[in-house]
Length: 117
Ligand code: 5GP
Ligand code: ZN
Image 1 (cartoon, protein in one colour):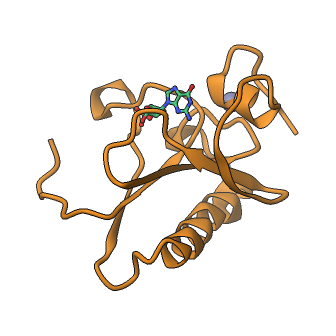
Image 2 (cartoon, helix red, strand yellow; image 1 turned 120 degrees about the vertical axis):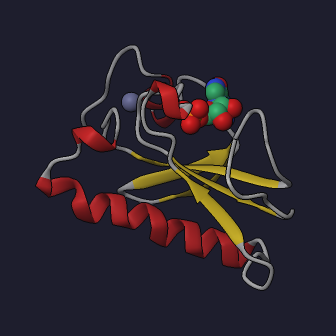
């Protein structure tokens, strides 16, 4: 699987940096955010290093869809189905992206405002 030497999430995937992993399969892993913004705050990350949504290729379409499937599974396991949950992808610096390896934030366990900040 392609990895980027300088990428924080590639290092977590390679277990060079520890993380609280809550799910993993051949395509993706999910781990708790180090600075949680809600009672449940999990990052769902493809094993393949793709810097951002704009860098996706046609071949990545199912992979990115898979991240949402993992989110729904984890939302169910965390009892978030009734109240709802939020999924966020910050894409690009002005959108708040700080780690340039695609990741889907799964947030739940509290009420969320709209519009986001
Ligand atoms: P972004 O700002 O790119 O959308 O999200 C990056 C997320 O990664 C942030 O919510 C941040 O708290 C989280 N994060 C940054 N460094 C680490 C780390 O070393 N471990 C974990 N588990 N999360 C991290
Ligand atoms: Zn990476």
